[in-house]
Image 1 (cartoon, helix red, strand yellow):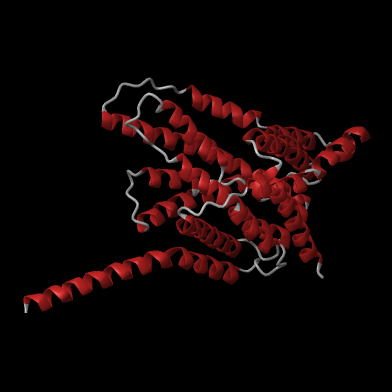
Image 2: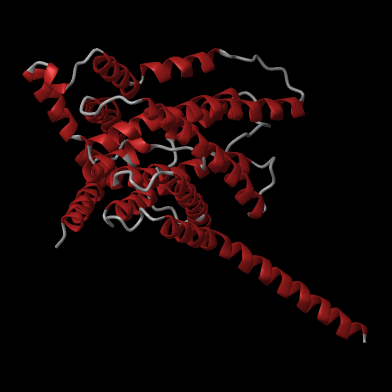
Length: 376
């Protein structure tokens, strides 16, 4: 049995343990506690160690730009897909899905597998790339969400108080987030010539033990958090297949442009990162808008139940895709392979629409034929 396969089986066992713990971890507060430990302790420790093991190079600054470009490409593709799905631009379903499709949550869905399969250099690069994603998710998507809300208010000709303080709060949250603080500290240490070995032994051991928690905690969290809701199941799978397919195509273009001499881990990082699950921050923006709508029942900007369903399916979906990529060696580090996977997933997403359209055309044709016979 190969090492990669052994790791995958071990990961699946941890997810299984999480599923078994569902009956023990029943409240949202307990689940939030596990998530807080991951995002505020284990993940920052892992990124801190990874950053202190690499050398800062100017080309690393390109990574946030590439991640931001991927966000915007998914944003544009999401518009196209929802138009094909027949969702009107002014519908709550359109707005809800479009706010989720282009967002990434690499912390819970991507970083653990990068750390396990691709190593410290890859996790450090992924942390840099996530800065661009954070800017998109925290700032751009918030502005879009509020813009939609104000447009609906304008249509209803209602009086509202515009509160711009939340945008400032989001900017401060971006700076205060443990992962970003850890990155600033680590980069500052590297700039003055310090590394992991420069820290006291006690601190090295403490950070290392905190880092070890990440992978098992994330996998158990996935098992506990996963929910199966049969309502709109087919459509949710279509949305996630479309999103994943576009991400594969973006990665194929990126690999085509990158030098073939790059290490395999870097090439796979370009494939894995865009496959991250949808971000919870999009849902947080929707919740903020819903709070503003409290005294305005005639306005409904987003469908929070649909958003929760997308998030619930997105995490296990991305986990499976990322596990397949990471455990397949160099198979996915190929432009043609990625292009084929992307086209296949896009086809899976579109086939139900095509069948529905064909069925509607067939029914119309039968009705017209019947009418002609009656006329004769």
